[in-house]
Length: 234
Image (cartoon, rainbow, N blue to C red):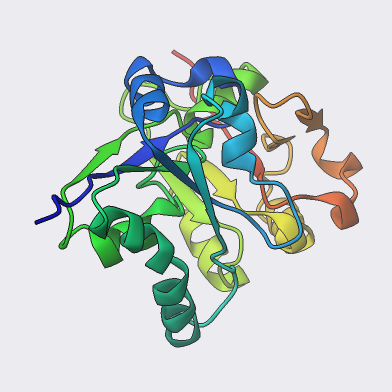
């Protein structure tokens, strides 16, 4: 009887290869199979982060989890996309699934985990998330003492964003992309624009920090964040 393989969800950090944990590196180099999320027409960001650490003799599995789908439409596609990973596990091969940032913080590995973790031994390795990397790259402390920090996905309706921003001390607005203009308008409306800091692709070689009102909305990537640090200083 074939022993089932083990599934590892490994956070590879926000982009700088040196932010990979020692545990992530050990598992990455020991696994016979490496899997990673990749858009159909683009190189996998997660793979690019760890490319220098790959051994060259591992099986690689790319899967595509399209964003911006309704949950019911996404379910069938996600079920199908994780099937090759399940096949390797069933054949007794351990699989490391790479995930930008942290696997359980808006990470693509969550969708693999919910489908396979009940059937195969699974271990999740935390990674440095963009939530930690962006304020450091910007050189601003997020919070002091008992400040409340709120993390907001930019695709939320404007009304919800406004409600949340009015009741917090500090905020991170993620997944900006095509929602940037809406968010910038809200920040001006609420008088928060002067505190808001924009950064994209934090810690990567393509990292950019641009004044909020100089950002070109047509060029804002998905991996961009607006940081609104606490106004408190202790």
